[in-house]
Length: 242
Image 1 (cartoon, rainbow, N blue to C red):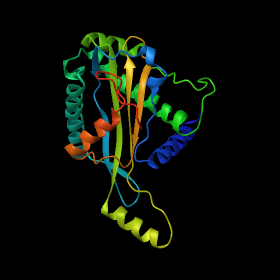
Image 2 (cartoon, helix red, strand yellow):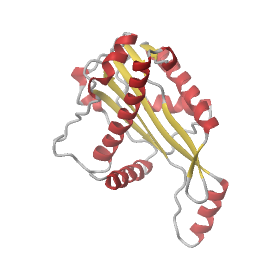
Image 3 (spheres, rainbow, N blue to C red):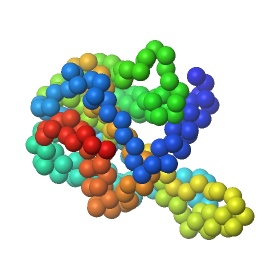
């Protein structure tokens, strides 16, 4: 698939996800045998970016929103793990040797690529014949060294891209609607993956889309984490109802 085809497919996936308040898929129903509901989970640095959607349709990253969201989401994760009774180690790049710190950056980019591929091929309808309906995705053995450093059995990743409509964009939406033209507002796409530390296999994956919370405040981030982790198969047995 070409670069532009991937972008188009990912855009289609985002549109499909945005049609729902939140959408889920349960990799755990496929990979149950690989999941440990006990043991330590290594939380990777959050791959989060919040932006302002301008009148011209350009998304401008907002550093303040982004840093606040990272801090609040991390706090909400710690609250969640206390309520569910499982151990979490926080990866701190400043405390890692140079090789492992570099490895962690590469692993973050790899997860981003694999997660986007899952969105494209499971949600945008571009099925891969090699998967044959199976949920079979992996990050390879890149997780092994980092997990061993923290004594973790599983590795947890969180990815968020969130944009908020500017006043100018809202005005454009209003006037465009007067002549029957739709103008896209801010969108959110977020996903989380639980990965087996030894094999790198993605054992659980969940997606949330626009409409679930405002990630610029703590209450919104707490709601976001609870929705995203609704079926996380660690600690107390997760709920499976939609």
